[in-house]
Image (cartoon, rainbow, N blue to C red; front, side, top):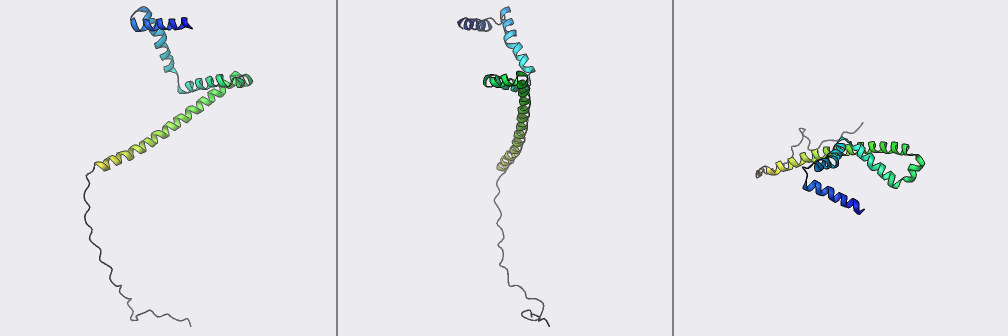
Length: 147
């Protein structure tokens, strides 16, 4: 363990103190550039698959022994694609909610930026006068009796 830590300290010192040397360029290419190229080629579901397989390896050793590594890998791949689709759907719904919230925020800011004008006084309503009676001469309508 100590030898490994000493080796890593030596590699770190070479990368810090002599990045332009042949050893520094080679270490940079092998330890920085190549892993970043490999990571840039990976898709989301590959990373999710890796996490699921690592979880199965750590916690589900019995399931791997019973079901076989091929079935577990196929199940992990299916689960990774499903989780990827769920995360994309969640992200799209979050974007839609942010857009609607952004529109509300824009309206609120625009409302607060407008100058406030005092309201005009409304004319007071006059009380309603007595209603006019019907056009017939009788003060109250007569009720007809059925014959």
